[in-house]
Length: 249
Image 1 (cartoon, one colour):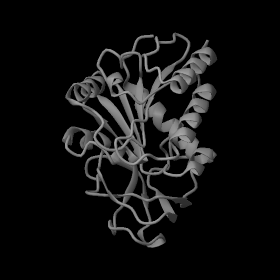
Image 2: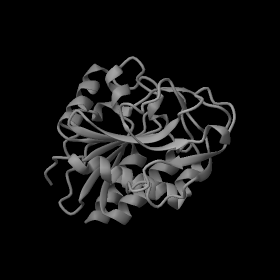
Image 3: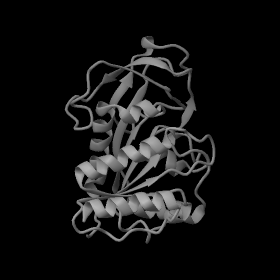
């Protein structure tokens, strides 16, 4: 039944149908991957969607996809344990949809932000608090060294430390360190062009207004979604974000 549900989710993504799927009593997690772009469109989104679908098959999740902001609604989100904003950009939610996301979090829902989820909704301060920080800029793609700060968290415990990898490294308007639990940061001397010198968190999590939020600034490149280490990190982040869900199967 789980594989069947996942196959249906894939079909919804391809057909553009964004109807909320019914909760699956077999799957222990139900995930919505939201990929609307009102700004820059990342060409890694299709690869990322497929990777999360594969994670769902491996872990028994039900996975659905949408780019329709109308699905961000208190009632339509009820079947889901977490929403994953995969490189969403720009202003893509209206006032009603904003209320839907707030209600989802307040009822224990989980939020996972990947990369450009921080490059969105700049006029909505609550969203910035949910994600943890807003995007400022980025230098050219290059190798940088990621320092794992919490080596016991499920999302980081299997990562190399230090972890040298290629990506598009985001600077943020303000460091979120005093408001979130930082999981990993960038070694500032390991790459060039940053406008955020010194302390530079790149992955974090926090409990927020009844729900949970987990974010990684990594994931711009298609190659990220073919890296087993990155995918294990992402899967554990999704699992953690789901942890306070009150959804009833």
